[in-house]
Amino acid sequence: FPKHFDSKAKDLVRHLLARDRVKRYGCLRDGVEDIKRHKWFKGIDWDAAFDRELPAPFIPQVRGPDDTSMFDRYPESTENSSPSIIGAEYEDAFRDF
Image (cartoon, rainbow, N blue to C red; front, side, top):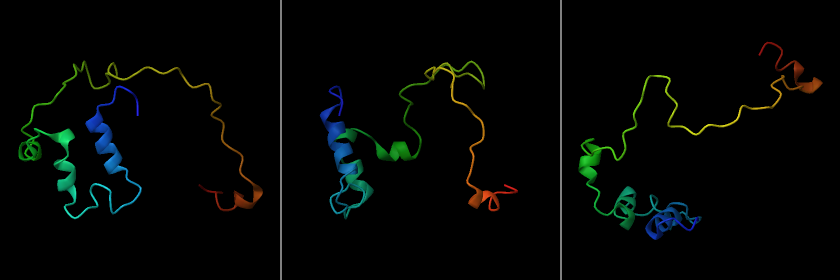
């Protein structure tokens, strides 16, 4: 985990990703309740969350339907987009595909 991760968040992730499913949150006897009771979620009103009554923690300013200003910018791909060559043994299977 990165050093800036909260210890409660790390604990929750470890429980959710437990290799042994009999120890994994969500797979235990209480199911999703084990997740909801985890200390990372302390103070969450789950009934209000279910009823969509909780305020959003962040509301971005959107300038239009195509506004992508809140997303990171990446350089254009330099990969060649030519179709790949398949082996002769597969040509019949993909002839009209």
